[in-house]
Image 1 (tube, rainbow, N blue to C red):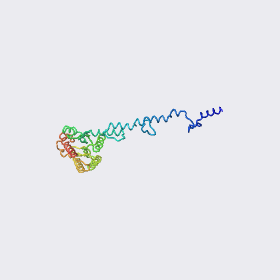
Image 2 (cartoon, rainbow, N blue to C red):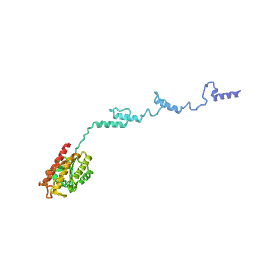
Image 3 (spheres, helix red, strand yellow):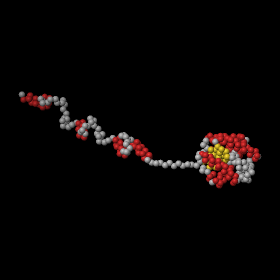
Image 4 (spheres, one colour):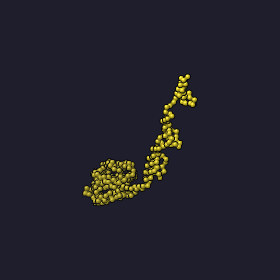
Length: 301
């Protein structure tokens, strides 16, 4: 009888299901569950202490303590430009642009306008080459005009060398406002006056079309005592024919013709060679060109 009782006590002690006080214990017992909580419960309890009011279901560790980078930028620029009332999300470039614009609008800028004088080119034969020094003595620099005058004279220049000389100078600088040409006398006796006049007109029309804002002045072929190719009476008749033709055609190249009626062969205006002017002749020659150029410049103002 003693042995069955001992086995019963042993079964009740080891097997909780057989005890009358045990209601529904788990099938498998966990050794640590009653003494130490799980890791999941430790983290949840820790965040429950920090934010005990109403924490969200899934907690982010840093979101409640440190603001995002976008919030940092917006708060920093709100302090710097609080008067500008920036939007909620500011970009660095927007704020910098606003500050630059406000500073620029309050600054007064002064613009200095520099007026350059008009430019005059005088191209021609030895009459122009010799007249450059005479003009400086008679009128001072730039013919005494409110302009910049450039002289391009060459001894023995014929008409076919005028246009190449113009474009050679044009390659180095801008075109002039007024172009004065005194050439063509060295061609008389070599070509007919009608052909010579037509060639001169065609070249001047070409320049007018290429540079419509440039005023063109043709200085008429002056009288001489001696001519290289032909008798003076015949050459002088051809000279008058060329000048009359170009005077009528001046409108085609948008310019004018300067006539030199005071330079007669019987007046004391020539050197002993009978071709070039003396001091008095240069004064008459240059005064007529200067007056016409000055009138053109005054009309352009």
